[in-house]
Length: 299
Image (tube, rainbow, N blue to C red; front, side):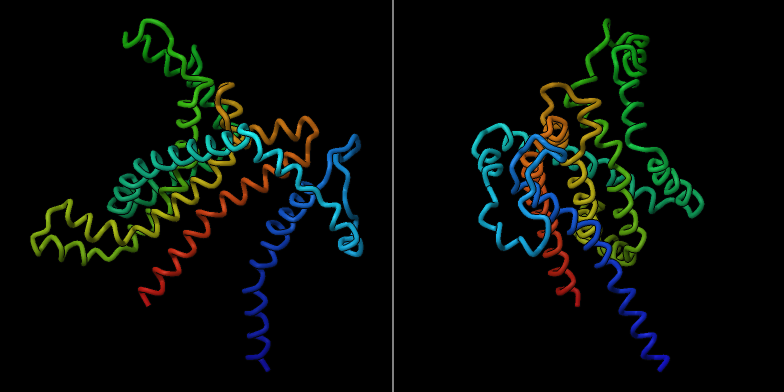
């Protein structure tokens, strides 16, 4: 009897994450999808709902309109904005990987107490909100900010440089904000890495670069993919950083979605959000398939 109760409790605990995903991921996405299939109206909320319950769903199924998606994908503006968001997020992810990889490796090789202190410093970045961190970068990159003051005082420049309201400022803030998300999975991979294989490669005459390419890099590929995914997905849909640090030419989907929702064009903005989710689902699915294939090979 006790074993049966324990089994029931265990199954319930295992299914709790699925319940969480259902309530806070799938259900909101269904609501956004429903809004995207509606028509704009002068009301509150500013769209005409097609059904108020499941009993009317099949009756009004034919009233669903895909006009928002046709307008979205038929022009060049939104595809360009989505492509720009992907490019900015991809470049920020690459830079984050180039910085985070050696940092995580150095942290894993540090002595015990120093390693824990470095890990705490990385985690402390999340102690302040992204809004506060973005305000800090506004003060650093402005014409009278800290960076220009340093450049002027050292004589490197004769007049303040324009950093704020540029794509460069967006990339800098992106890399700073999401760098911990790259470091943490890489650090966990390096700490749990089998050092005996690396020592064996060196004993067999492998150069440091060849030992890295043949031993360290293959063992950290899953962590690299995980870190890139953790950085790329939120960076592509970020709103705060491009709104505060980017200029008029900085086209990112999060900033555009906010403008559409502010203009009370909820169905069109919801359609853009659904398209963005579909685009971002591609790397997630590829990562899941790669991970399953890797687990299958290992087993």
